[in-house]
Length: 301
Image 1 (cartoon, one colour):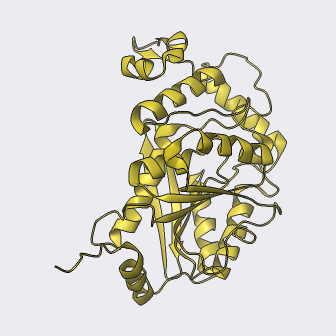
Image 2 (image 1 turned 90 degrees about the vertical axis):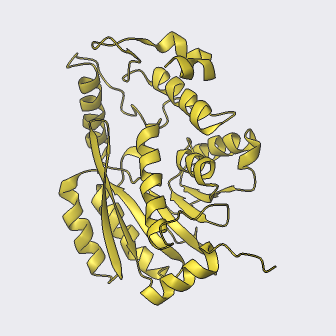
Image 3 (image 1 turned 60 degrees about the vertical axis):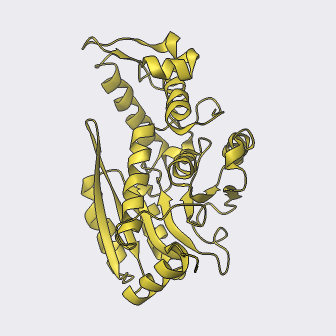
């Protein structure tokens, strides 16, 4: 914590001793979480500037870093155990948000380039601001507005464009009421049952928290559209909020006959999560992709 405060001094005012005698923050306080995230990004990822609009989603950095780490391992499995590095590796972040977390960590950790899609113009403006104030991001991150909320890849992916991996953190809830209940549970857990009313958009705007039909409907749409771009992406992937939803996600995927499906478990602290990944490329196409995009060319003497 001392090192994080040195990286971002405003964090100091948010730090206090927890019940275990350790320095921590109040994770039910959005400002404190924002200060912690800013410090983490500055300290571990050398980010010069990071900020988000009030009441927009402020994601947990370790969980996002985990997703990227396992995604990198997926690519490494098809590259003789070596993670492909550099901005030739292109990633698509579905719903990049005002926070731009996946592109930031992915670029700073692996040098990858990113396209981030968004349905919300305020989020686009916030993410553009982050890019403009971090010189190393320029030319390595591009933002695209999704004009049709029902679409995921259509209107974003361009003809002849290729992406090595797609990342997605879908809206988990099916309605505003469900999102409100989830926010209330989150606050209750963080405050040990104290009756503190959570605002509807605690930890995110409505489009970040819920969509018609919820996460399962979103994933079905994503899987269905992915088939139309089967040769444009090596690995499609998406987080799944609950283990009970994995079975339905796999059933939806199998209808479109991908060549490979993987469910990757993850764990950060007490939180257990997972993501599903799939590809339509045949083994021969995967090998050709690896040779043309990832293989390091050794110059002849």
